[in-house]
Length: 573
Ligand code: FES
Image 1 (cartoon, helix red, strand yellow):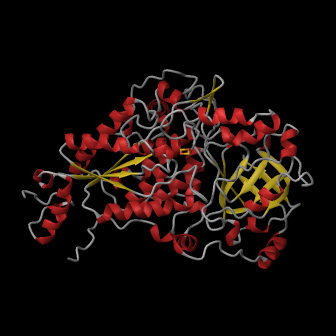
Image 2 (tube, helix red, strand yellow; image 1 turned 45 degrees about the horizontal axis):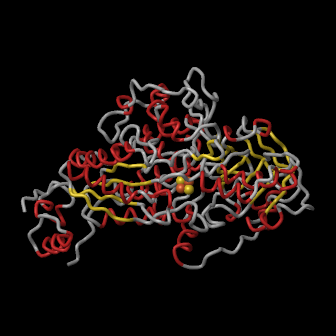
Image 3 (spheres, rainbow, N blue to C red; image 1 turned 180 degrees about the vertical axis):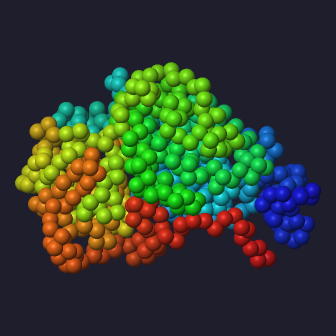
């Protein structure tokens, strides 16, 4: 072997002792020739493919394309599976398993002879989970987002995956949609491989990694079935080999400035609220100081440039044809740090100069934005001592300042049991309060914050009400919905002691969320509060409940903060 100990994989493949023999010999059963062990960069292709994750079901093919690129550049590709998180199928919530998937990714990378990693991602949590894990190892890493599905079509109209399902109750109740109508739409919104094609969480995550500098330029918006997506995958395979030689590891790309860029860019595209919880968790792994207030300070005044559902009109396919994220990056560059380095070795500014917008209805200009202020607002007040979020671009302007009577549901089961009760004492001025859906309480902080309105109010023509919870909301949803209330009710935050009939004040402009009771009454209720019994007593879920942090810290587990680096696992043989 002429291996010269240049790379980490030397310790497995470069030695002529017994263990060098073992490490090479068993891999040879796949037919690798001797020169694959000659000291070339070994590239792990971390694949979130699964039949149970429909949004990522095409990634097995993509891995072969990435391998092609790695081999062309003189690397040795080794694909490996990690826990995949299928948003639409997993119960009770993929968020419960995001940290588990990150642990899987982290330990698999560290335990194996890898010099660089390609992350194949798609569905919502598959991007942050794998990136969190990779950050805790800090090898050279490039992300290949799997891409959105083609636009959904139904009766000649564009329909967005994810966004329509929130309207099903309304369509059935108010527009008399039949079962046949719903079936036709069920088929029409999933016309190709890929993830949700709205600016939901998956698309937001793809824009996040491109803005962070972790993809090749333009990767985020290319539809999954567009041949250019495979070109991107192949070029990423080539590039990761060079990144290993340059030692361009994650921590060199993921600077504080890169995180600030991601906040600005994601505001301009009309991000999902989930972006915040995931970016906080990623920052915690790579060791960059970031907090909830940064998102308001940096993002809330950023103009909205992208006209995509759920807030707007178009879908990801249209976004790609209009020029995709590079056009947004160029337009928003005055708000960015242009000198941040990206995985192709050039800066964000260099990568995104002289772009042409092909459709200004889809991507607006700074001079004529869709909204002047698009980012997510961080609320504070006695109802959310550590903060809460609202997405103003998805909310009703008339409700942005509102005082209303609380109608309280202690759990999501309580909500389902009573929301359509004709005798429920509720009208459109009320505030729906949902408890018990936070990180520890549910557990796993599900996307239920945008609960449906009562049937009787839908029939009256009411389409939005103020809703408050310690849960999350799908990136494909909309409404005047206050989310991520921290501390959550399960740990005795003020949310836990809200009672039916209390008055609640929301003032988004003043960033205020207030429970209108006296301090004395609040303290009296808190002293009398009894914590709910935990919902799990064993296994991973118990570990999660014991260690998960609150939403304002990214809901990562305390024992996973930071990283252990890429130090080799001891070889005990
Ligand atoms: Fe996978 Fe929406 S369900 S991206």
